Image (cartoon, rainbow, N blue to C red; front, side, top):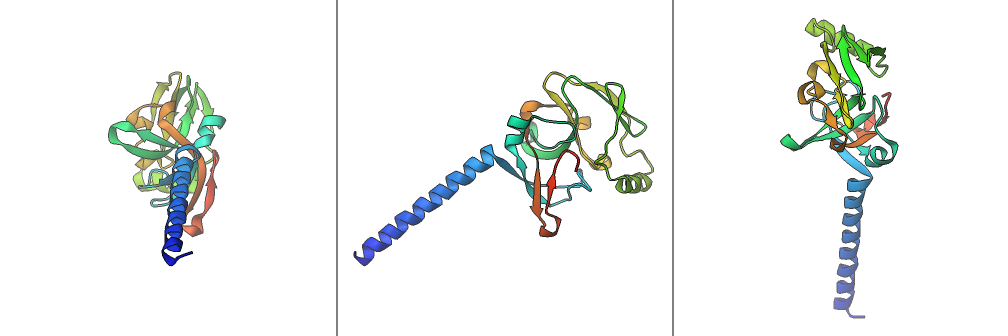
Length: 188
């Protein structure tokens, strides 16, 4: 085989490999996992500013959306993705009174909240962690989403309920920074 033929064969193999990897990456990020990077403090202390990870697209499709899942939601009007937590499910009535979550009139504990962090935020701001609101009645395919850092989160209290079609993925794991690698689930 000539030197030129070997080089052309090498180029073809390299291009084929690049195309296969590109197609695989596109398919994986469109149908299996969605990469995310958090900007801001709305999910503190669960997820910190600039942390990166992957969330589970298939989990929304096959596992459904459950209360307290961490989800990636798309806001078309501003063409941006947000990371939030599911608080209210379809056909429920959501309300906060005196820093307590009520679903259909029943108090629901939010065990994922870091109470030391909540205390520090309320002491610093001399206010409730979650300002009273509601009742908000959700429709058939609507979800009420909130950031874990209620004092610094724009969420369903600002945007209103989110439709199921806007929720692109859920849970997953944080992979950067390396010293904070962990899974994100409904109770984390």
